[in-house]
Image 1: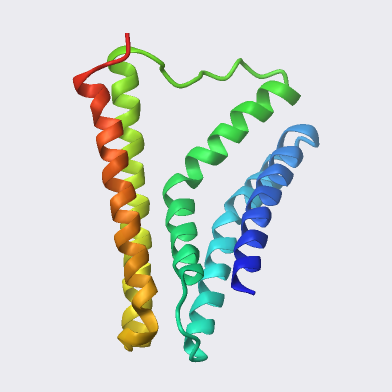
Image 2: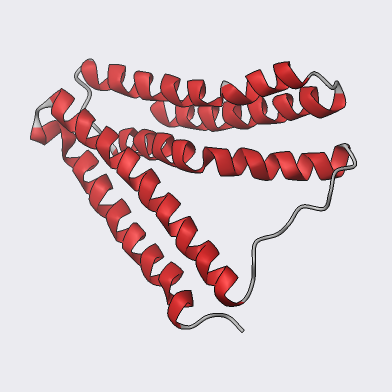
Length: 175
């Protein structure tokens, strides 16, 4: 059930973004479009509330509960970038906007871009981990929250691998 809600929230996020952009650029209603774009964090909040209610009802935490916290962390950290990316693409394709500037592919600019992306990943991990620790403290039963701790650890390993990848371009920039 919770896995379905995570998927529904992801779909809801992008529906709000697309509807916001359509209303903003096609119908030229900038305020209403901006309002829809600002509502995207409400989807995250809804998912988090549902996961906490599920845990409150005595369910043993699973990796799906961890995925809900990851989703919220990633959405809060990367959400602005995702919406800006969609805004640039939509503006170019449907409103005669300028050609979107792609990410740098070589040299110092690329290395800087990769490092900044890793810092955003670190922010997402921090937010998600705080939410996961909050869930662990909320349930206060280690036998029911072991998978949440494992989720933090696994995501930490992924973050470390991303660190190695992202910062490798500082030492060995693409030519």
